Image (cartoon, rainbow, N blue to C red; front, side):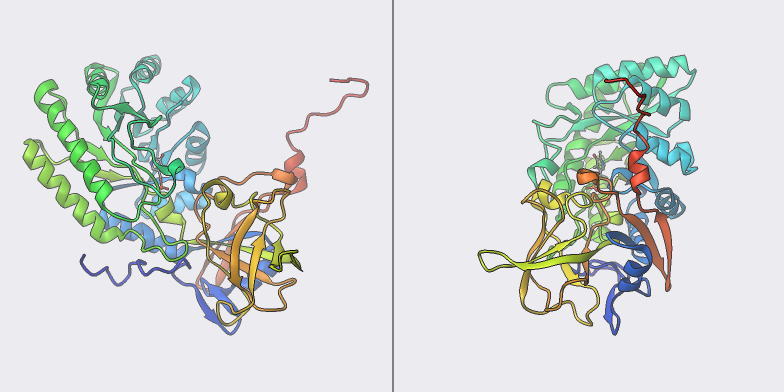
Length: 443
Ligand SMILES: *Cc1c(COP(=O)(O)O)cnc(C)c1O
């Protein structure tokens, strides 16, 4: 492995790039986080803009084409930020696509994927003029073609294939195996039939192949294996069907540090993947396709941290000390969904934490609503602000209003100042879907 670039954030710390522990406790972006908690309230998602910027630059330096997977975190400010840094954006639904269009992103920088798109979503994407539509199966290709004809457009398409390469930190995060619900299998000939169907349509343009093998992958090997597999298939398509693969999109899944994991090094992995792509293309005798990636977690995961306030401290019957905070599974369901672990520290102390060990639980009516166990949090915990690291991805977007809990605010910090990116949800926001109750009407 070569040495990481000095600016790369590959050291195994779960805290964002500018985080450090000073006299006012944890500071991010030059702002003590206890001040953020006081000004914006808790729970609060804090984003380190410098961390985001460095991650975007590492990615654009390492890969020819980068899509940010908007499902990891979606806000207008964030979408504009990553796009200004040279990333395109991958939407997984009509809702995410709408957010990108409302953010003013150029449609040609957008891609829409998904294994269960509605006709409305397909129509929305084609009408908007998205740069790429990732088709998941043969029947969908006919629907995209029909939409393109109706709208008198020619739509660029990638075909999502199943590379039969597994990767990912949890069974729910593994998406590239034969049993996957995503994409068309290569083995059965279905993928070739799909590619040929696109290539033969005058309303569509076949641009290449797409795969996504899983998430929170910490080693480059599964990506290299997927590249071999896809390029071999691209070779077959070229020789047998005369179909050219211009873009090879190997999806996202680059892993980050939550506790003590060694993150996937983006620069060296990017170099290794490009080398592998060139070698495989030469072997197949095809032009080298443009390598595209779609990271979500690797862009925003480590940039974010969540601040909570401790509302209650008590000793359980088994002697464990328990601290309950003002959020939990509603703003971060990852521990419950995936058994995920996060690093946690008291925000006001000059050092990350000391004894006694404490179990930190959420406020929700579920015993599994546990944020971290056995953390040295020191004494005098009541009313303290706790910081949970690496919550930038798949926390806010997986958030719910369980127990009618409003979603937290999202604040970005940089160079000593803080700006609100998403305001805190209110009880009025939660009420906005209610319809007026007409007197005397029972149902
Ligand atoms: C979820 C997803 C991504 C992003 O995954 P990360 O693990 O956040 O990098 C990229 N591409 C596709 C098709 C996805 O489903």
